[in-house]
Amino acid sequence: MALELSKIVSPAQTIIISSVSSNKQLPPSFTIMNFLFLHKFIPKRFLKMKNKFVYWFMGARTIREKAVFNQILKDTEITFFRWAISTILKWKHDSKTKNLYHIHGTSDNIFPIKYISPDYTIEGGGHLMVYSNATEVSSILRKILEQ
Image (cartoon, rainbow, N blue to C red; front, side, top):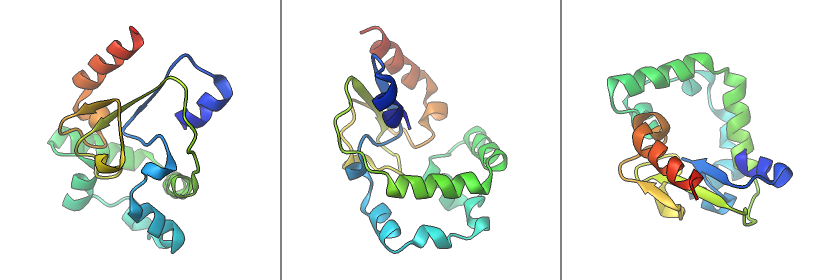
């Protein structure tokens, strides 16, 4: 969403965290899911599921991280999950965003780093690293904003 807004607003800097800067950085599984319309068949209960695999996939390792993730699940409507998945799968953005800074974790299972070339990496950071690695993320943000 930040990249789409940057096309309209023309900010001095655009910073993305635990995200992708182009649809070409999405993992192949996303292309397959979109091509086969698999996202249309995800059961509602799966979207709110809490188990070891989901925690691993999201990068929730500690009891506190799992509690935060559980609260996110509780507070988020299923219609939003469906919209978000569909929007990501259909998203097309391959233009270069001016003054883009990309912070990404090396252990993000949703957007694996092997498909991405971030400006800054956080070793062991997962998709929830804004919470789990908040100190490191804040340090990088300060460095970017001071430029």
